[in-house]
Image (cartoon, rainbow, N blue to C red; front, side):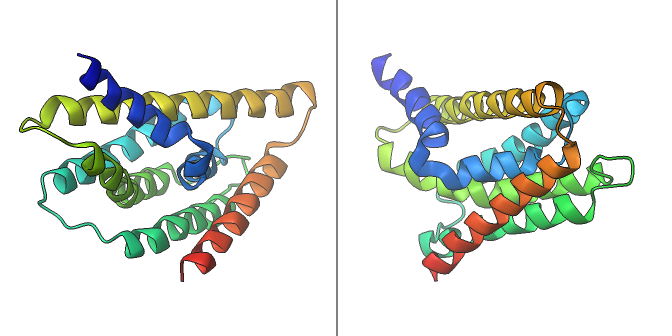
Length: 191
């Protein structure tokens, strides 16, 4: 049982570790265009991301699809930059992201790419014949960590909009711009 708990903890640590800031940055950039009142959409977006990265995590762990770490190191910051651009382009006149279907597609498709990065960590830990329960627990740890990050992010958004009376448009521009800038730096360093 102790070994199985290790998979959950490693999944959790993989997403909340400050050294995994590229994944944290993606989740925060993904949520930046949504207001507090859109928390249901945020949960759907996070779920779409989960479905995407769970799929490639499973396929890669089973050696059905190959993993190329150099390519993944380029694609992950690229996903953040595209998400940041979409946040700004599709931020509608009504003060919220105007194309939820596009955002869901972005989360799902880019989740596929992020799953390959999670898979390399999972494969490193793998031992034994059965991977079903370890894979489930590792992914569950990632998801719980991801929801924790989203909760902290939404609390920060609430403080900004309700306590400081900041405008959501400025929040979106700042978080998306910062996400793009940091991701561009990561991308250039990976070249």
